[in-house]
Structures are given as structure tokens and as C-alpha cells.
Image (tube, rainbow, N blue to C red):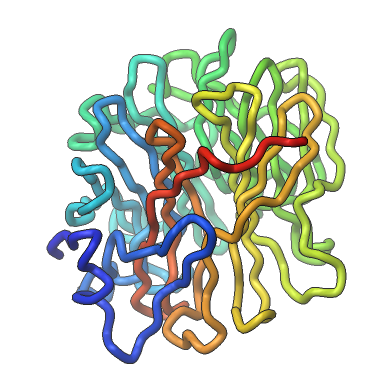
Length: 372
């Protein structure tokens, strides 16, 4: 698969009968990584993206046959020109080829150690098995070395998700949710690495309540997390998790990041991060799946100050046109700061069974208003 130029990819890589995701107040999204031609790798999904210290953008995602169809793995792609082009995806693992106990690769967590090494953790699963595995890269994603995630693996946890955080006094911290057949099989966990992600400690329980895909940030001594509601709960909102004692105790309550009352839809996959230039300021992305206002879903940017967490919705980021039959499976927006108010966004969109590409764009959030 050849890389696509950012300015030309929409014209060159998308069939004339297909529609693109639509932009909002931050620009128009474009194709970052086209679905590979090989059917075993054509479904790209659940991306994470990070900017290395030298400016290289490292994009990680799952590549497989389809949405949990049996046969997928972890791949990474690099951009050395600020997101204008991304290179061919490099495969790190594929299931069940690499381990017949697992049939698919799912959620991932991505972050950076204090020395600039990039750390990637991912999950693999089947109906009666789940595990966590991972790698480190000290050369901005060119080469990868495996890490020891055995304390989290083989039915000890379930899914890993979000940012791998640098936390003073702790080291690297990652979060995830339990899933069957682990014990417990519901709840949120955290794990700590004291050696830059080379190995990970056993899971620590955050909450016994069922949630999916917890996304966390750490700012000014406070953990702040957004939790996707489990099936059967009120999926029109997120719950919020806050700890002021490095994860020893937690307060969990409904977040203000929610779908307005009366509108249809549900909220998958939250995103949250700290501004690199304003350490008290948080950014969040709210995904909404549901048909309203001529769309089948939307993503909005939200902001808050870490001390009061009075979230305010900002502009629309992207939407999926209601008539985009080529984009029936989509979401999981993630972004990484580039400097000077610029962020790089990545998300997936395509078919649930078959080809699915990674889209994204540079976003200037420097003019996003502060709380009045």
C-alpha cells in the first residue's frame, strides 16, 4: 500500500460513489491510511496516535477481516511530514496466526515514557480467552521490542484503552476494563510500570461497576477519566472518574458530556487529554452514534479546567452523512498535540464487514474559548 498525499487523497483514493466524513468547525477530514487491498487486513479500526519527540506521528490500529470477525492484528504507520503522508502499515502481531487461543486484536493504549520511548499495549481475545501484550519503540516507531505484560495477560484483565500516562511519583500508568472470562469480569482497572513500560504491574481495581473503554488524563495531581457506559445503562452519556490521591480512592459520577435530552443516539469511546501549553486545561472528544440532523453520527470537542471540571461543548469536529452507506462503521476519534494549538486527529470509518480506512486532520484549537 502506497502512502497518500494529504491534499490529494480524497480525490485519488475514494470511489466516486462513496462519501467522505464531513468536517465541522476545525476543517475537513481526509484519508490518512487507506484500507489495505488484502482482505485479511482491510478493516482498519480503533486507532491511537502520538507525536514522537522528533515530530514523527505514530499511528497504531487494528487491521483485520472485519469488526471482530476472527482474524486481526496490531499494525503501526508513521508520518514524518506532519501528517501529510502516512507510510504502509507495519504488522506487529496477527491472530490467530501468532497464538491460536486468540482470534482478534482489539483496543489499544499508546503513550510515551520519560525518555521519549513510545509504548504500545493492545488486547487480543476469543470467546473464552483474553490477553494484553505490547511493545516499546525507541526510534519513533521504526522498530519495536516486546514488553512484559504477563501480570495483565491471559484472563487477568480484558481490554486496555486510552493514553499511557506519565505520572510523577508513579511512572507510567494505563487503564482498561475487565471482561469475561477474567475474574472479576466487569469493572475498571489500572496498572503501573516503574521501568518505562518494559514491564507492567498487576491490575489495581478502580471500580467494580461495569464500564467499557475508560479514557484517562492526569493533570495537576488529579486523575480524570471518562467511562463509556456498559450495555443496559444510560449510553447517552459518559460517567466521570476522579482521583486526587494517585488512584487510591475514586469518585465516580455522571459526566456533563452527554447527548441533549430528546435526541437519539449513544456515546461510544471517549477521549480525554491535557493541553501541553495549559496544564490546567482538559480536552475531550464526544462521539455520538445516532441519526439526527441528516447525519448518522457526530464528534464534538469539549473543554474544562481540571479543578472544577465544568465541561463546555465547543465546535463540531466531524460528522458522518446520513446517506453515507459506505461509512456504516465508524468512530473512536483520538488526537495528539503538535504544538502551537495544533492537534492531529485520527478516527476510523468504513464497512463493518470488510474495508475500513483511517481518516483525520490537523485541528487548530488555539481559539477555543475558555470558561467565562
